[in-house]
Length: 467
Image (tube, rainbow, N blue to C red; front, side, top):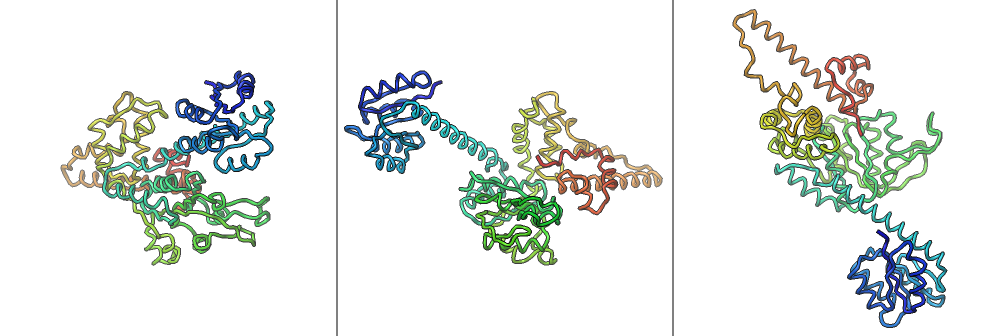
């Protein structure tokens, strides 16, 4: 459909000039006075309004003001004679997108129209993108009827409009980053960057440069000046994930940023000023870390301005059916799955499992089940073996004698050992974001030893890579 342009000018020859030159590309409507033009704007879907500034009756300035009371985003171009340029400048202060001088050169007008429509299209696309981001990362993605979850959703809406530093606490996989994004996208910084840095995933010798950036020549390999995450998040939000893992020598530098909104790049001597909102998250008890001397007490109190604590999934199991429904809808198109529900048997297994990996583990489990599911219902056999073990507890053999008891105890010990080992590897991969070397180093193992455990339990590191 052609863009619809309304031309308002009291000279008939001007109206005709626009119709002849612009009709091939645009749908042109014309009016000779402001009152009629206002009625057209109210009754028709207008893409662009072009109006003369000086007209009898309602002037172009008044028309602009009245139109923008109703449709503040409608682009308006003002036509004006040389003697009334001041009026055109005032019109732009009132919201006109541009002005053009009479006598009109149609080639210049066509270029101005194209530029205006292109800018407006980009503006609309940006607005739509922001709305999509708010839908994608807003509070609607925090699913649950549990009173604590409902309280968190309420607190997000209250703290989002402020600049308060927020500390989000909870076990791995509870959704701390989802809460952080919801705060950002409900704030007045939503159109600015949301920048994430995982303090546990980056080696301590690189973390300072990642956070603060570095100057050219600051160290071997620093071939050019690089902005850090703090600068990249200017005007927006910096999310410090796993803040409890930050080395103490960097904690004092982050404290300065929180207090003064300035820092120096690695190798630099001049202060860089930023306007950041900082949200931090941790799966550690920072109070205990302060008492143990591994975390600065002044930074803890500066971060703990507004604290949110997310409960583990095992403490809100009544939310599992809602989460199942949410994740099936979320991933159905991506994985081309027909699954729309979980059977009663599958749901019981999901409800009985303790979920050490919390909501993230539940989501990954459902994605796997959707891939395996052949119909529109996920059944118990589509779920992983370790979840279904609870179904067979009543089938455990009761030993008939002493030797059989010893044998069964030995088997149970081996099984328990393997379960602990497997969960150990899974948690290490989570914290290392799927990187084998990083995960191994964090738990004090060499790469080959850790890789052997990954293979032993058939764990895919791809499940832990950050997308």
